[in-house]
Image 1 (cartoon, rainbow, N blue to C red):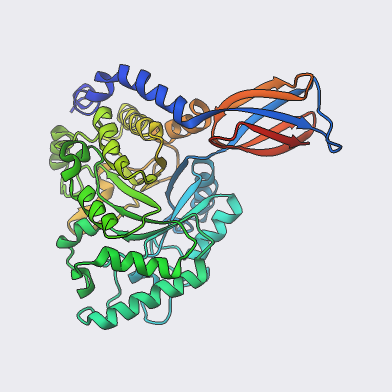
Image 2: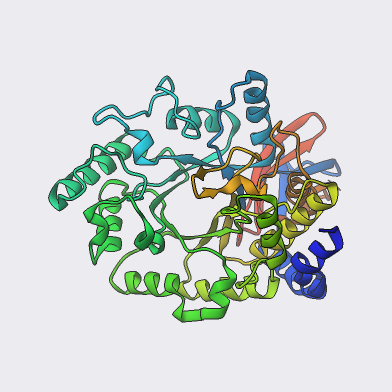
Length: 448
């Protein structure tokens, strides 16, 4: 299959809606992600620093651009482990830490929280992940408290009372160790897929399961940010609108008194996950990203607009964008699809972040009938060299959506500028100070 055929199928909307991306989406980014600020620069005695050259540099976006951290210290080659540690912090400011119950507590009463816990592939110990994140200044999130699919074999799965007690014990134990230490906590995951789970407990059959699990989380994680994680293909909301299963599930829960601090929605395009040979994989490529047109920017925007009806912050929690082959041109297509998607998400004022799922090709989840590695949805090759998509992601947040200015203070020690929201360094001569540019804060005094 030639590159032009792939472009005609997969980049149809990227090319067809360039005006939309370059005008409306670009305007929305400038409106929703940037703000005007007036800084007054003063010395230690409180006197204005007059007529001095100042450099302003964005050091960390308010918007979270993250990835799961499932491969931390998971490579057999120590050089790759070192490279992973070095690379992750250069590209991401949020890390999803695995808390799947079956691998966190494979033996009852012996949870694997500690750094020195026995290793399980793609399930690094939470303390190890958190130590790394704290060292690198990366925010960390928990994934997830309740996912009744990946649960230990030792559970009494058919005993409702015991399951309720054991889930409460799990929540309480995790809260005692991690409450107040993480950026956010995913409370439940993929309820909409529950009918197809082959492994689950009786507790999944609760009619009020969302209310029950969220109330349990509120009991133990009193001051933490609690969110849900479900759904897939954001454009599917544009087609079903307020009759979309995810919208209706959330709507019923909220009307029933459930409080979500944030709504998470997945956005996987799993190309060829069930393919058993190259012919089947190519057939998936030809079929394209239908029926939901996952890479249609107008539909992405419309889908997000449906969720904004709740007026609750949003996060794109799990992202997979396939590479349609092994050539540089194939990688360019993946990079274009990434820029298209992130641009529309970044433009929406309620979206607080976007989390890519599998960072490295060849190390994704797989089972006898499902192999996520087939679509080469990673941002990096298996040797951790960056693909075009990784370079594009870094370009977006380090260059295109970035603020770096050289200015001069006026006769009152003031400077004004318009920049992206986030953390900044201000440098005058050989001195540096830090400040935050946030919405609705128009003036800051900085001592240096």
